[in-house]
Structures are given as structure tokens and as C-alpha cells.
Amino acid sequence: MNATNAIFYIAVLIMSVVIHEVSHGYMAEYSGDKTARFAGRLTLNPIKHLDLFGSILLPALLVISHSPFLIGWAKPVPYNPDNLRNRKWGTIAVASAGVIANFCLAIFFGLILRFSQGMNVPAGFPFIISSIVLVNLSLGIFNLVPIPPLDGSKILFSLLPASSFEVVNFLERYSLILILVFVIFLSNYLFPILTFLYHLITGLAF
Image (cartoon, rainbow, N blue to C red):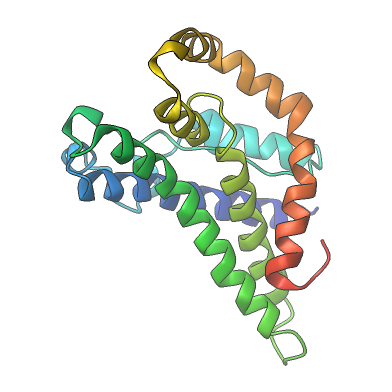
């Protein structure tokens, strides 16, 4: 991958994680909590959301190492679960909102790619649209992994019985180590899911 394509991929990732986080904030507000709005985080301005490691350094490292799976994250949008009208289902809705936003973006641009096949489009058009689809599918899949602070953990913890507090405590205590282990050693196992969904949406092989 040349430098221009790598920069474009990272730019797409940054905007995708921003949309992901803003979706959390809007769902929290819809569910009764305005913490994100009061914190000034209901904005698409990436400066408000960027995490140096998760939004820039890690994606750059993955691009340089030719990883087949580009992932990253932004600073979490704050919300107070005590303000939600229904703490359990509100928490699940807030956690799911970012993943759903990424999958919706992937489906929208994936269908554009599918129905533009055979049409006279600019030379770089397939690459641009394909990049958006791949990045958003990667984010959606990655965030469903049940390791804190990823969204999958919040969904899982909300569904677990109170007696599972030791499991929750373990995952939260060692979350950074578990995330790094997953990214380094296990993220490639998500690649078959990515390729399947990409083909399902676009009709193209990856």
C-alpha cells in the first residue's frame, strides 16, 4: 500500500470512529442522558474525539505492517447510565449504537459499490468506496468483541446475571492487556467474518 492510500485509509478510519462515538452520544441522549451534549461531544469535529494511540498510532502501525484488519478507536463519549430511563436496555442501546452506525455505513456504501459495477465511474471510485466499506465493517466487527472498553463488553455485562461480577471484574482489571493480546495475536481470526460480510454486501471478493 502506498503512502497516499495509507493516509486515506487512516482518514476514513478517523471519521468512522468519530461517527461511531457520536452515535453513542445521540443514543444516550435519546435514552435520557445528556452528558455527551454537556461535554461538547455531539460533534463530528474529529479533534474532540481523537485518541492518540487508538485513532492514529495503532492504525498507522497496522497499515505499515500490512495487516488485513484495520482497527482503532476514539475517546469514548461520556454518558451516565444512572440517567437512562432504563439502565439495562438503555446501556445495551447506547453500546449498540456505534456498531450499528458502522454497519449502516458499510451497507450504504457497499450497495453503492455493488450497483455501480459495470458503470463508467472515475478511476479511484471503487477504491474509495471499498475502503469505506472495509473500515466500517472492521470497526463494527471489532467493537463486538467482549473486552472492555469495547461495545461488546457493555452489551455482555448488561446481560450477565449479578453473580458474574468476578468475570466482569477480571475483564475490566486486565482490559488493556487483553486488548493488546487480541489485537496482536487474535484479530486475524476476524478476517473470515470481514471477507464474508464484504462479499455479501458488495458481491465482490476481497
